[in-house]
View 1 (cartoon, rainbow, N blue to C red):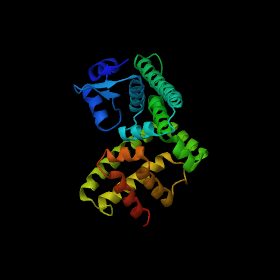
View 2: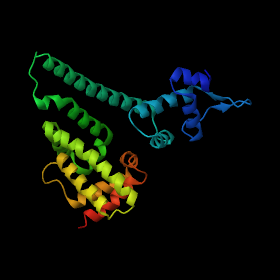
View 3: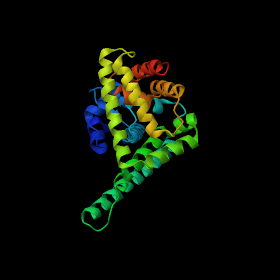
View 4: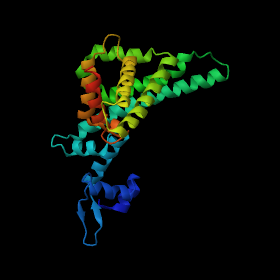
Amino acid sequence: MEYTVNKLAKISGVSTRTLRYYDEIGLLKPAKIRSNGYRIYGEPQVDKLQQILFYREMGVNLEEIKKLLSDPNYDQAEALINHKKALLQKKEQLEVLIETVEKTIRSLKGEIEMKDHEKFEGFKRNLVDENERKYGKEIRSKYGDDAVDASNAKVMNMSKEQYEEAQRLSAEINETLAAAMKSGDPVGELAQKACELHKQWLCMFWQEGMYTKEGHKALGRMYVEDERFKAYYDSIAEGCAEFLSKALDVYCAE
């Protein structure tokens, strides 16, 4: 079956503007363009759009999706299996959060007593699972299963105060980096403050004795080399991943 932009937008829920943009960047080209200028999409394009939406739902940026789908070794069936695993994991995360909400409601009604650490159980589990889904393979390859498992256990054992402190540190790092980027100086006071805050944040997740300056520098390089980390830091300010990596080279050399 063939679809115009308007018809494909209707069945997919994707706006016509987005479909045209996907065409412009070479992510989803139409099967053909009629003499009247209408874009026409066939079954292969419909399937490809479905894959794009799965990846978008998982938080993958468009540039990375384009690389994945254009890979000659790309296997649609394998990709769908991976999508299913990711969705099931997301379902588990939501169920844990729902359970936390239900416990909180019962606690407010006086039906049960809920300890402070239980109020954050769902959020911590969500954080661990999300990090595993996005970065688990690379981190485990780099640091080993034992180190990553210990780090995950440390997160799950965080107190209410520790969890809130980790969230506060994360926000302060981003704010400090954004301010440091305006100066353009990775050696400057603000940039080095961001590095110190980053170290404090890391040590809240890494097991005791795991932190080394060389490991910290290597992490900075990974932020540049891995598109997902790069996208996260560059969302703070353009070029932020590279800037942080340079700042860490200085911080860890002292």
